[in-house]
Amino acid sequence: MANHILSIVGWGRDATHGDYWLLRNSWGTYWGEGGFAKIKMGGKNLGVENSCSWGSPAPMQAEQERAAPPVSTKTYTTDATVKAGTYFDYASAPRPKARSADAHVRVVSPLPKYEDAPASWDVRAVGDAKVNFASPSRNQHIPVYCGSCWTHGPTSALNDRFNLARKGAWPQVFLSPQQLINCMPPPADKTQGAGGCLGGDPADVGPFLGAHGGVDETCQNYQAKNLYADFKCAAEGVCVNCEPGRKGCHAMGQPALQNNFTKYYTEEWGRINATDPAANAQQMVAEIGARGPISGSICVTPEFEAYTGGIFEDTTGCTSLDHSISIAGYGTDAATGKDYWVIRNSWGTYWGEQGWARVRRGTNNLGIEITAEWTTPKL
Image (cartoon, rainbow, N blue to C red; front, side, top):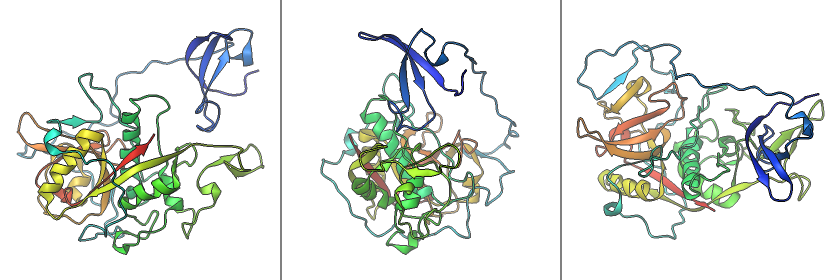
């Protein structure tokens, strides 16, 4: 009798053992072959061939269509029903006036050059084949509001760089922001936040992952809360599994050499934070065009919260860096000739352009060209 549901994602033939099914389980990437398994076809093996179900996707459809935007000379659209504070806590978020104090950097390889960068680049459409190397979008506010953008921007960028460096080969890397919330100490520069869901410095993420390593999301699911008041996480704060019944949860990797899991490390990490935003913009293009997405910071405004599409251009002049995002590409709009950044936010796919946005490039719009961070994956 069947007692567990999984997905069957392929089949193949082994030279020694014959035909097999390729299964994807839901017990974390530390189980089986990165969360997957091969089992022999035929012979009623585990009852896998007794029954199955399938579905085909229908065209994407919005649950509720937005009202048509009013006629405007703007290069972007907004939703008037989105009020200030829907996605961002203006009262509690750190609003530093300057870039954070310099964190430790490790730069070994020659830095990319602006003149070598392509005219446009987008992690969702790389090369002539327009291959998508973007990792899944995230929502930092579920199940509760949490000011953890500083973990999402850098890890999303690094996920993509792992995918690019490995040419999309399985298994895909999907780093856990919750591990950073649990284990990273508050920033030394207190203007950047008080740690965890109370804000942090994205420039600290690269050095931390270089020293301690990051884990997959299935090791430490996102909970949107501080699990350790002192940020000195126990082993359960890194990678955990919970057993059936009342047996409770236990740290993976315990006892020693048992229940092992994979850690992912950074090789190099650096910052782009010259005093000239124009120079930063060029180096950001160089870095993205050569090695992939980076993390950056912006000022959140009510108009940005309400953004639904197009090339966003702020008119308030706000450059207080209070929100971290990943900058995953750049380009030039054919209709207007305006340069833009491709950014991925962490407010869910119902925000912006499926969780993404285009922001005016070359004008330090929202302070986006004040500072940025990059990391390279250790393969």
